[in-house]
Structures are given as C-alpha cells and as structure tokens.
Image 1 (cartoon, rainbow, N blue to C red):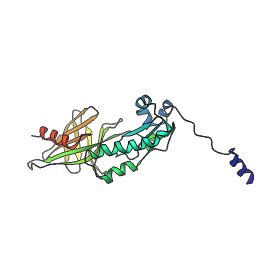
Image 2 (spheres, helix red, strand yellow):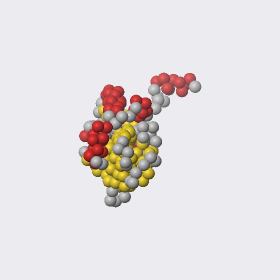
Image 3 (cartoon, one colour):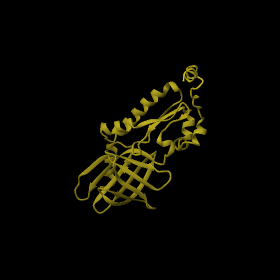
Length: 227
C-alpha cells in the first residue's frame, strides 16, 4: 500500500490527461457537433454549453479559449433569459432551463451531455395566440416549439409548465395540428429568417404559433390574419 501511495504521489499512477479532439473528430462522435459543425468551425470553438432538457430552447453558446468558459456560461444565461422573457415565460421556467444545462464539449473534449448521444430536435421559445370563434377575445401564452426535427415531419409544442400541449404534423400540403385545448386544426406553416409560424383553425378556434417573436408582433399579426 505504501508503494502504491508513493507511485500516486509522484504521478506514475495518475490518469492521463484527456486528449483534445478537433471539431471534425468530435463530429464523428457527437450528434450536436455534427449538426452544428460548420458554425462551430467558423468560430474555432473549443467549448460549447447547451441545455439538457428536450423542451427548453436549443440556444447554445461557445468559447474559443479555455479561460473564457465562464463567460460562455454567462452569455448562455443571458441569451436564454432574453429569448424566454420576450414571449412571456415566468422567471421560474427560465431558471429551470438555465439550471438544466451543461458543457457539450470543453477544451476540445466531449462531456457527458445528452445532446452528444441524441440531438434530433431544435426548439425555440414562442407564443401561441388564439381566439374562440364568436367570442372576440384574443388570448396568448408563452410556449416552446420544435421548429426543426431533422429526422421526421412532426413537431411538438410545450406550455409554460413544459407539458406537451400540441403536436404538429406535415400533412402535405399544409399542417395538421392536434392540441389538448383546441382539438384538431388544419392550416399552414411559414418559415422566414429562422422563425416559424403555424396558422390554423377549426370550427371553434383560430390559432397561430410564432417562434422567436415578441407578444406585440404576434398579436398584431394574428389580428391582421383573422379579421
């Protein structure tokens, strides 16, 4: 035991330092890096931080120097806060998404982050605006919504408690939306400048979903669409 303790003390039995991989090498092991490879290479990223929950925003931040890792964490926090605040999420929901985050890779070494193993859906903060036909009362609520699922043609929408409240299917043409509150709706999908809008209705409700838009924009657009 003394001999082993001596070897540890002089460093002969310590674990070797993790070998840093290039971004191209990490892309072969990480779904997250593979799907964001070109952007990460342009930024010469050595570290990236992202949320771990599938219903939280897919925003991530990076640094290209090890001493800037804390700055990347702070920038991630600010970005998630800004995005979720502008659509009306309560502080508790914002903190939940910030706290459930971690390094995807750090100093060129992949970390134990779920998006390395599986990263199939991109989620944006958004807002749903709706009206029951005949009521004249327009209501809205913050949501997070899948805007790119990479591997299929269905998207989920989550409320401020992160419950799955709607599922959107590509019905070609248009979209078919099933919601716990609104029932089944038919409509269309438009993507522009990285933002997605779903517009749909049935015999009872008129509904629009907006990703990455403030409440004022969403309400104005809803009023112009459903006059």
